[in-house]
Length: 84
Image (cartoon, rainbow, N blue to C red; front, side, top):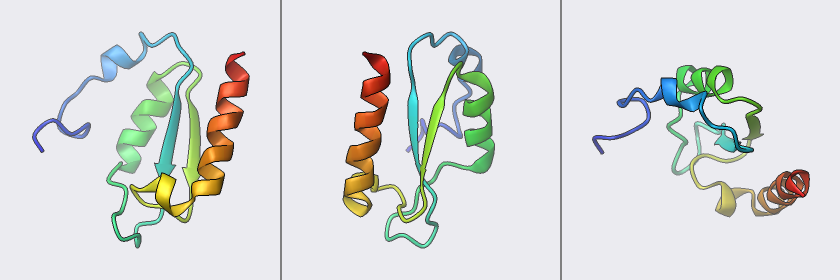
């Protein structure tokens, strides 16, 4: 792809985010389309983004809305409720 998060270092800019951020991470490496976020990249996000809310989906890969639709909807609702 050329501009994947693992190839472009924008970690210094992450600390400038002063908005609520939810990161949905599929953790199932055996999924049809696995998530390609590395543990190293996830660690950088956690350390760099103030107040980052990481939501892990154990039964999903990259296609979280398709693979765990109900939990996805619930987590979006919970995140949005925190904003109001």
